[in-house]
Length: 173
Image 1 (cartoon, one colour):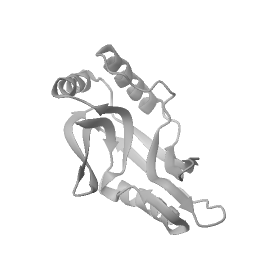
Image 2 (cartoon, rainbow, N blue to C red):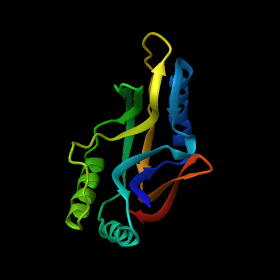
Image 3 (cartoon, rainbow, N blue to C red):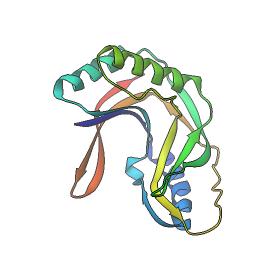
């Protein structure tokens, strides 16, 4: 199973993010845009995991000791790519998210998981392989704040050609 640990959003937050995504989509002549139901904040990408590894991730989540916290959307940006850019929405600096992500990553490494070592930059991916029609676009980000009370272990799979993310385990903070 292809797995990742994420913060999922309620419908009203997804709707606010989708508005920003749609403004970029309107300016693009090409792109693979994240479905509204798939919008999330990845904390740790795990990749392919067998049943034993999946249980190890669940035990790490069970050991997680964090309090609820809030975060806010900050800005829209993109990672330049040859085949089209990856557009994202960044979050205002938040020590709670960084600490949670760091704690999860460290404990997963101790269980034998090989994870990315680059600095964690919390963002919500809204489009991949995006090519903008012309000019520069500057989509605005409204003041959206979200309370985080849980994290989910997510399964990623293609069903009938559609990318589907499903929560297979939830840890309340």
